[in-house]
Image 1 (tube, rainbow, N blue to C red):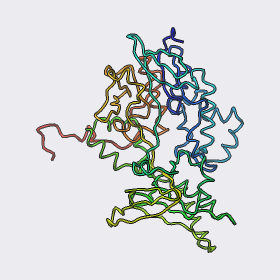
Image 2: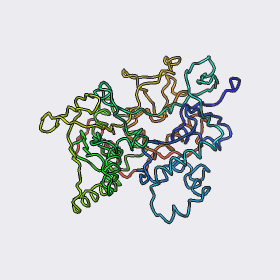
Image 3: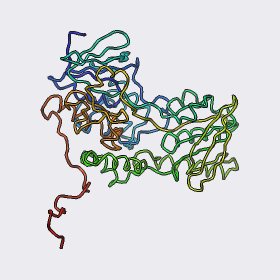
Image 4: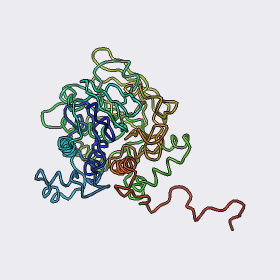
Length: 437
C-alpha cells in the first residue's frame, strides 16, 4: 500500500465522503481511497426509528444532484434490491431513515475504494504526499487529503460533570427499553430528534397496560417550532447562498448562524401533527397525556444522586429559576464539528485554522495554505453556512472537489439556481458618486 500514491485519501465514510467516492468511481484519471474506522457503515443507528424519514427528498442521495445517471444513486439501489415499484407506489419523496442507512451500506460495500476497519491514527507529509497511518498499521499515501470524519454528540457540561446514566439521542435505540422502565424521563432539545424521541416514548407509554414514564420535554427555544421548508427558504440551500455567505465577515456569519436554526434544526410538520394527534387521542380517552412541555427553558445545572437527576432550570423569558427531578435524561442537543482532530497534528502547520481551531475553508472547501491539497466535508458551517451538513448539498460539494482535483469540469456545477438574490443585485447598485433619483 505504501508504494501506491493515490490522488486522494479520504478519512471517514459518512454520506459525504461516500458521495465523493461514488462520483470519483467512473472518473478514470482520479484514484482515491476512503478509510473508515467502523467495520460496517450505518447512519445514525441510535435514531433509526421504524417510521422516521429523511428531511430531504431522495434526490439528496450520494450522486443524483451531480449525476443522475451514476450507478450509485438511490433509485438504482431501489432497483437492485427490488424496492423501486413499492417506492413509486408509496408516492413519498422522503425515504425512511432505515432505508437510507441500508443504501449507504450498499454503496460502501460495493465501492472498491472504501476500506472498512481502518481507523486513522496519524497523518504526516513526506515531501511528496500525505502519509496516512491506521490503527492496524496500514499506510496510505495521497497527493490530497479529504476530511469527512463527521460530528460528535454535543452534551451540556453540567450533565457531563454530574455523571449518571444520561444519554444522547445518538444511543437512543440501544437504551430505549431502559428508559421505558423508569418512572420519569426528561427530553432536552428542540429539533427533530427530540420530537421523535418524545413521540416514540409517549406512544409506547400509552399502549394498553404499558405503564411507562411520565415525560417532560424541555427546549431552550422560544417555542416548539416547525422547520421552515417553504420554497423560497429552500432556495437558501443553493450554491449562490453558500457563495454569498462566504463573502460576509466572520461576525456577521456567526450572527446569521445563531438566527437560522429554524431553517435546519426545526421539527417536521408531519412529526408535530403526529404529536398533536396523540395528545388529542389521549386526552379524549382520558388517558393523559402524562407529560409536560416547556419552551424557553435553559438547562443551567444538573446533579445525580444515584437514583435521579436534579435539574436546575431557568425560564429565559420570565427569568424564573426552577427545578425538576427526573430519573431518565435524554439529550437531543445536537452535534458539533469541533476542532481539527488530533491525528492531524503532524500536518497542522499546513492547515488554515481560526482562533478556535476550526478549519478555514475556501471556495473549493480547501483548508491548506495553498488551497489545493486538503479539503473538508461538513466541517465548514462557520465559513459556508448552515447548508454544510445538508445532505442535499453533498453532491454539489463533491462535484467541486472532483473538478478541483482533476483540473477540469467533470461535473457541471450550477452557479445560480435561486430566483431571489442574496446581497444587492448588480443592476441595483448605485455607482460611487451618483445619487439615486
